[in-house]
Length: 387
Ligand SMILES: Nc1nc2c(ncn2[C@@H]2O[C@H](COP(=O)(O)OP(=O)(O)OP(=O)(O)O)[C@@H](O)[C@H]2O)c(=O)[nH]1
Image 1 (cartoon, protein in one colour):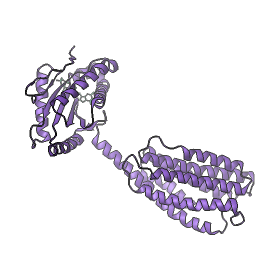
Image 2 (cartoon, helix red, strand yellow):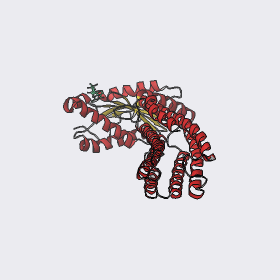
Image 3 (cartoon, rainbow, N blue to C red):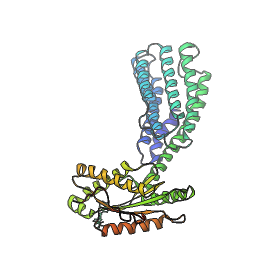
Image 4 (cartoon, rainbow, N blue to C red):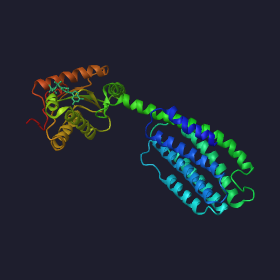
């Protein structure tokens, strides 16, 4: 068991390569557990009940319990939870303190430590059984099986040590529980390693997906991901006979912002614009950074009036926030295209929205044009941002 854990503690960082936060917690957890088991073996070399025995044994309990607490944090993070349960960490502290203080009584220390280890594992199992907040693979069931097997042996040891001390006078006693422990330990170490690697692979795949679909600067969807989603939404709109509108936005005189405030200042303006989109978007609005200082919004179940309302909300938000947060106004020009027929593709809609945007720029900027609004072809923003 100890040798297996040590091998894993050394091998995990090598297998995982560059790792993120949850994987670092998992690696630290395995390393602490391995150190704990090494210390437990070393404690058998000390004079029984000597102060050296007390110190090394207590440290070994601290290592094993802290390792489980670190692993619990890794599992929570892998399941998408940010605020993780602190109970396993509290138990690790109580377990170590109680074990060190009550070391002189063998039944107490064995019952206390194994009882709390069992409780700690039960809490981790309960947490693993909760519905994850992000899609995760089956690795958590491998861990649940592994932890349930370890709980059985640990709880059994606790009861034997506390109440049947003659049958279980020390950790290495030739009792059936120890034979069972040897078997369970080897199987569960392998299962746990497989689960940790699978969880890490899941996380890496999710991160890759996020990087592939979002814009690094603003955090909104990138053009490719938006086009994929927009094509799906258009098909759904056609099936359910719902109106769909596209708003194409281009920030005005953006080059001047870069020239005036530097590239970092320009980046800040783009980030603020993305924040504005997030703030005013409603369910069914899908937005992206289309490229450079251009953004696109697809509005599901939205007629021309709904698109206009979105545009006005966006202008009002920027009118209030941009001078306050950037120190200057952030005007934009926009073109709107409403889907006119069932067979119209997203590319065709974008061509029309782009042409309306071009006209808006030509008409002097800081306005939104929707040529599809028959009775009101040119829509001036109700809130002008011209200086
Ligand atoms: N800071 C920053 N600037 C960018 C980024 N992407 C594109 N730009 C700049 O955006 C500017 C776009 O300039 P133009 O296409 O001339 O357009 P404009 O100055 O906004 O003028 P109009 O669109 O005609 O109103 C260029 O100076 C680009 O360098 C970016 O990620 N960060």
